[in-house]
Image 1 (tube, rainbow, N blue to C red):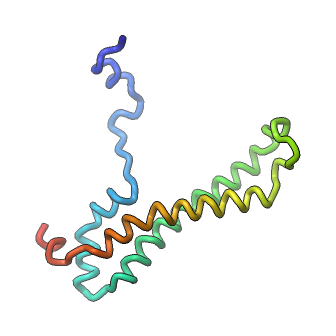
Image 2: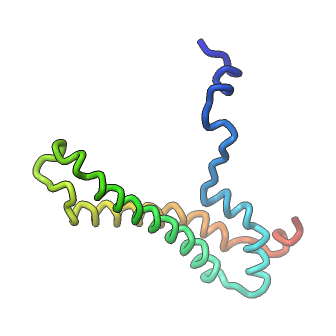
Length: 123
């Protein structure tokens, strides 16, 4: 049995801070408050947050498709009834990932539209 301090010492990810969309929005609270105070509407803030999340997801999907195509010859023997570079499969998986990314960005984006400018400028 390993002690807690032993686990902390051997953890390679110790000190790595993972940031998701909601924590990024929390750190951008002041910026979004200023944007709303200067006249940005809810639709503008929603479009900004969703656009940034979608852009990041599309970059990831693009790089993933490139690496998957490059490495598909290694798993060709494991596939049955489908080619390693089947365009329909790649398109279906990419579109599913885009939908999941949009759904994951929508909740923090909705929260960002409800930022009170006075509260944001206070802190």
